[in-house]
Image (cartoon, rainbow, N blue to C red):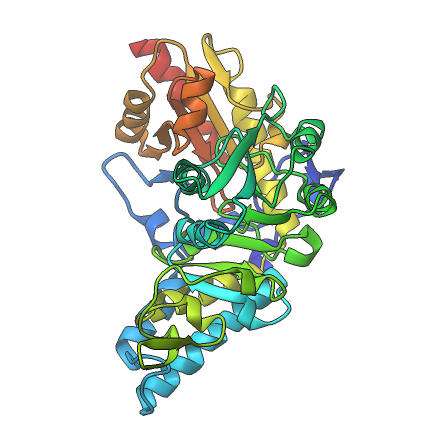
Length: 435
């Protein structure tokens, strides 16, 4: 895929979206969606009801050929380990593993590669930070929102239950956008760490992270960003965001499953304690004592997922060719089209802001009297439209707010106007005929 695929005219809308905090016409940014789709083998897999319409990108994005080839290259050409052996395969593995780390560091705007800790996913990264903040002489005070993924709630809940830290949750605005005044009020009660999403997986709302960081730091708290939904559009700058820690998964950004990373600012890395100990985490063991190796290796226990690292590097390279403004504009156009198309359906309610420009790539809704899982299955069986249904790993918020399980569409740059129109038509037909 060349950069031209993101610049050539293909499908676009004359509507407007918020891009870089200002209103700009979609025509300002072009993407050749048809050309991009050729990079993704799963999109060209014919089924009994046509080509797949994949609208579950907030869960897992599809993978381009380049990512698949990069992972296979490790298994086919130099399937060794790093930092343990000195033969040719081991040397190449070590070199490519560290090259991948450097690529990820550049993608995030980290100061140096050692600030990147390779882990399995966002969940493990958050658990690493959580365990490190637990058990101090004074229990750490951790602040999150009322609407969190289980991965950014359960670790804190469990440690709070054990008396190892204090957890507080503050409410969002009524439309589930970020409420700065409620956050400010919560900070006055004291916080050592603020742990919030870069972007909500339930609503698609992106939070004003720089302002949040400034407010947290002024109150003496560090900031951990759950970046699972924040890395999918292209390069970010952790310093511009003000993040002290940034957790993310490769599978949210075209990369492999079972691989992710934690950015940990070198100033705050000493605060972290290894989550798992064993091979690679120590320099030496003698007389009943051990010495940890230097970061990031002390946090990366055991033989690593080298193919995963190469796959993530390839995903980073792919997204680095993209113009994030083009991606945002295209996705916003699709979201606006679908939102307009389903408006007026009786009993249908959108979770989050009504304005699609505030929901990024997500349209999450409930339909009165309709089981969300049943509806999702019917969309799949009748038109191979793949969506997510349920409580979206945010059981606490769904239960406390009384919100029934929902149906979530999450869009990406390879989705098309035709797919958006097909969804609207299929949804209306299903509701009219079966409910």
